[in-house]
Length: 211
Image (cartoon, rainbow, N blue to C red; front, side, top):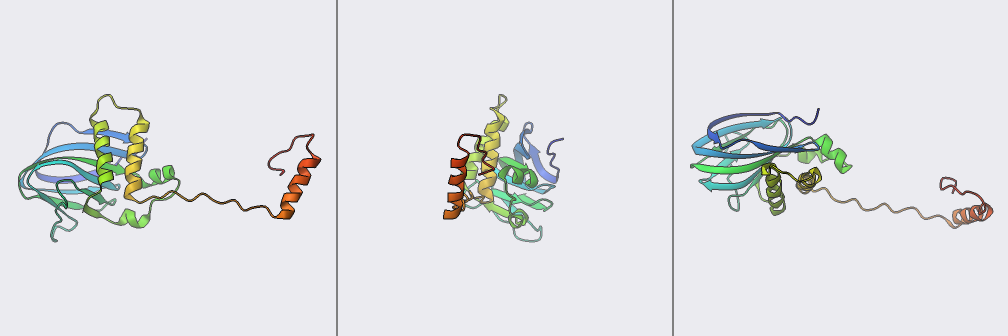
């Protein structure tokens, strides 16, 4: 069985518009939502896996997000588009201040599967650290392409969406390309031994492991 994310939510004053559109790629589930929110609407959400919440479009009033219902909320900075990252099992609360309509993309992912794909483990510290209402133009651009794949009935090859979601996670966690390993040069004596062996066995088969 493939990756199956679990999500629990309690919502008041929020109505989903249309049907959920989703796609899955190698340990990542992408959900595209559109919702109508009344003034003062509230929601509480918690996911069994890490989740990236990306606001694509918003019409109307504003909303705030908080990690503690008793603490002041955080509103989007730099316009309507914002991104929030929630670690696995960490609840988050949202509240609208005025009536609004919102379209957003949720990316749920399995860290073990993503780490295996990358060939290195995602940072445990970053996986545990919530990030609320930040902006990132690259992730926003990629998210719109992913949303297009979710909404498109005749989707492209899976490698297209897979590359997009991996690019988002690479940017989110700051995964850098490893510097190529430099091979230890042979000493003069080792090089002479190799060339002598080649000269002695030139008429036969020379295996790389022998060299």
